Structure formats: structure tokens, C-alpha cells
Length: 385
Ligand SMILES: Cc1ncc(COP(=O)(O)O)c(C=O)c1O
Image 1: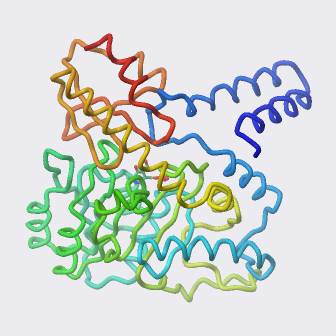
Image 2: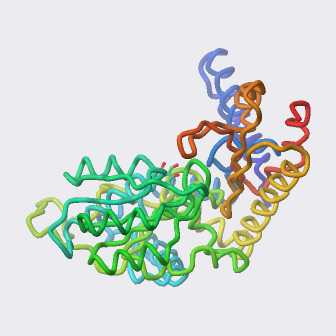
């Protein structure tokens, strides 16, 4: 089978030979080396996985095809593959409808747009935790909604008592629960958020951009219990399933509200009721190639593998240090050593990053890759113990 290094070799030779001058050839070489960062066993800086070789082939396939699914009648094969993948995710999340998006910033915007279009009450308030991704407040600004952050508890989850009190004060149009916060990977209490949303007749959106991947693992999906009851859910295979950007989905309970005033005379089909415009196989052919070449089980194995590495990392840090430590169920481990320890060098090497958890700046290790290993990360940290 074509491996990742075969593709790298091909690129290196082809592009270097084609480049007009030496400096461009050198730049190509440097770019390829720069991107290899994500394949290191110590890569744990961000939610950016190494892309597997089938997905790379899928990217090439998408480029060769280049169809635009705003004219689906021209591309029945592409439509069939998209449908197959959407059906698979719909079944997994027990949500009847879904579409691909260019990332969860778009997914969150699409979801809150629908919440506004299909509003069950006249509120313009959206509640989510103070750890919700900033794309939620951005989406609210675009939509003329008012995002009001709710404090988090010491696990980084939304404080459900504070959420309930806020709802009693003003019922929201939507509640956003996060399944896998960007900073520390916390999963908000999904069932309680759903119950509160139901009580106040509000839309419940779950931002599972990072943590949604757990649904693919029979060992870990229990952390997302209740997710099938949400009005909408977004998930990013480009964060936690080894896919290249952009690859993201929004799943939902009700068909999208039609904006009948949108009339486009050059399109034979009605325009889609989504934020995104032109799109084609680039959103899903890499994922499809990973599935048909590696198999579904490989996704589940990858998730189990990286969560096991995250757990090993957290357990070892707990054993060897008395640093403040916050492991999560989604593969992010946050920690805070005494203030005289400065880990900037490790940040610059891509081993970790910083994040704010409940107002304090902490270090953060993100197991986005099945290839990220606890041992070499701990070895790099050991000189600071
Ligand atoms: C929880 C969460 N939601 C949404 C997003 C936005 O996703 P994207 O960068 O794919 O637009 C992120 C990005 O890190 C995230 O962590």
C-alpha cells in the first residue's frame, strides 16, 4: 500500500524538479519538513492530527474530481458517497439530518442560525459555559443574538446550577453544551443541559468538535450519553479523526428551515439552507478513503490508543509530581507546575501549549494523534520534575 513516506517522496521529487528556482525548491523542502511536526511521537501542542495516507489520497481524488455539489445532478457518484457518509454519522449519533461543513466555527454558526430560524421562544439569549469556544460568541454576534457565558466548575464544566438560575431569570433561545472544551477537554453535563433546555423550551446545541469522536469508540462513547437528544451537534474529524482540514459535520433533529426568499436564477436546485457555499469532495473524500482503506475499526482503535496515552501521561505526572493536574475524558491533559518552571521551550517544539482554565494559565497536552506517546513527552518533561 502507498505509505505516507511514498507520498512525501513523490512530492519532494516532483515539486523540487518542477520549481523554477532553487529558493522555491528549498522552500518546498522546508514546508514538507515543517508539516512533519505532526507525525512526531512528542507532538501534543494542538488539536491538529497527522493526516493518514489514505486521507492524503482522498485529497488528491477530491482535487482531480473538483465537482461542486451545489449542482448535485451532475455528480451522482459524489452525491452517493456523501450520502453514505452522512447516513453513517446520522446512525452513529442517532440524529436524522446532517451536512458537512468547513469546520465547527461554521457548524456552530449554522446550528445557532437554525435555532434562531426555528425558535421555540422569543428570546435572543444564548447560554454556554465561559469555556465555550469563541466561535459561539462570534456566531451570536453575526446572528444578532446575545451570548451570555455561564461560570464553570473546578472540572471546567458548565455550572448547571448557575445555568438553571440564569434560565429562570431569562429563558434562552439556545443552550450550548460543549463536549470537549478547547482549553481542558471537559465535557459539560450533557443530560442536565438537555433537561434544562427542554424545561425552558430552548434549543440545545452540543459543540462536540473535539469530543464527538468518542462516539466511535464503544469503550468511551458513554461519556456522551444523551447526545442523541440534542437539537444539533457538531463534530470535527479534522481534529480528532486524523483528517485533513476542512472536514466537519453538523447533525440535527429537524430539517433545516427553508429560506424561501433565497432565489438564485443560475442554479437549477434551490440553494442550500446552510452557511457554506460551493463545496465538493474535499470535505469528505479523504474521510471516505480512510474508511474504505483502513476500515471503521481503525478509527475506534485510534481513539482508544490516544486516550490510553493521555491517561498514561496524566497518571505518570500524578505519580512523579505534586503539580496541579486536570486530566479529561477526551485526551487533553492540563497541568500547572510551580511558577519558577518555564516550559516555553517545549511549547516552541510543539510538545504542549498554554490555555486558560477558570482564569488561570496552565500548560496543556493534547493527544490528537494515535502516534503521540506519553513516554517521550514525559522524558522531555522529566528534567523539570
Ligand atoms: C470546542 C471547539 N468548538 C469549535 C471549534 C472551532 O472549530 P474550527 O476550528 O474547525 O472552526 C474548536 C476549535 O478548536 C473547538 O475546540
